[in-house]
Each structure stands twice: as C-alpha cells, then as structure tokens.
Amino acid sequence: MKTKQAHCSSKALQSPKARNCGVIDGKLRSFNDSWKTNDCQQCSCQRSGISCCSSLVTPVGYDKSCQAVLNKRLCQYDVVKKTNPSIKCRVTSAVGR
Image 1 (cartoon, rainbow, N blue to C red):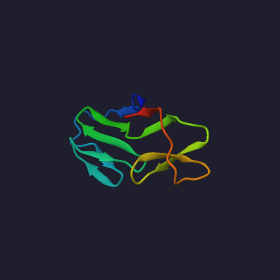
Image 2 (cartoon, one colour):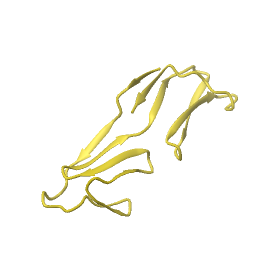
Image 3 (tube, rainbow, N blue to C red):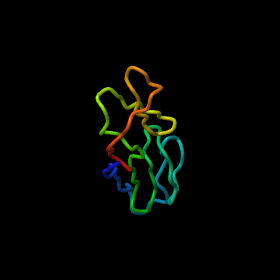
Image 4 (cartoon, rainbow, N blue to C red):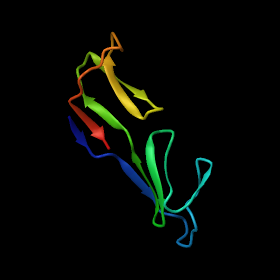
C-alpha cells in the first residue's frame, strides 16, 4: 500500500521566556511533553513551541462498493463493504503518518 506524508502544524510560544507550553486540553503541558488529542493529533511541547501532526492514516484507494469508517477511540479507519460492514475491503493507497 502506498502512503503520503501526514499533515502537521506548529505554533510558537507567546513568550521566549515561557517556562512551559501552558494549559492545553485542561492539562499544564511542560517542555518535552507529548499527548494525543481527541481528534487524533499527536502533539508535543518543545521550547520552540507546540507541534501537532495527524496520527491518522486515511485510506483513499479502495473499491466504490466500500466505505472508510473512523474509529476515534483507536484513531484508525476500517474500510468495509457498504452493504455488509462485517466484510473488510482491500486498500491500495492511503494518506497520512
């Protein structure tokens, strides 16, 4: 299966004298912390700022009779038959991670 690179973003800290990255998702994020968000982003706090990348591999190459179903708890897609979700489909290409 072919894959392409994940989407990433970064945000600089508001002050170069910051002692941490601040409160994110209700938790104080210290330098060198890493975490996964509710929307399947893998983030890290560094002195240079906060960076986040999608941890999802999104299937894009599969038969028209199939559909990609997101499992947010596992942060992964299952590709299954539209008419019978118990049957998995072959994936030929994906975008992400």
